[in-house]
Length: 86
Image (cartoon, rainbow, N blue to C red; front, side):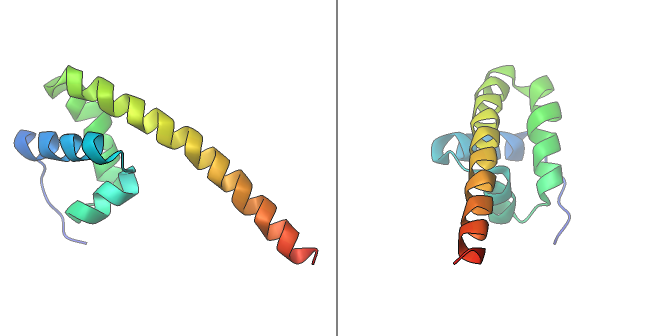
């Protein structure tokens, strides 16, 4: 993966993309070819300082994604055990 420094303009562009598409951190990282840990850090720490309104919208999306992730994990585990018992 390429290492890119995220400036304020790029961070806002990424934030708006995430808000418009309701995508996950992983999907956003893949689109912009940036490590997902960097995307998450920039969206939670740097955006908080640079654009608080955008941060609040991103925080809501991240919270939703986290809830959905827990549900998907539970469903995947259920499917795994159902396949094993057949």
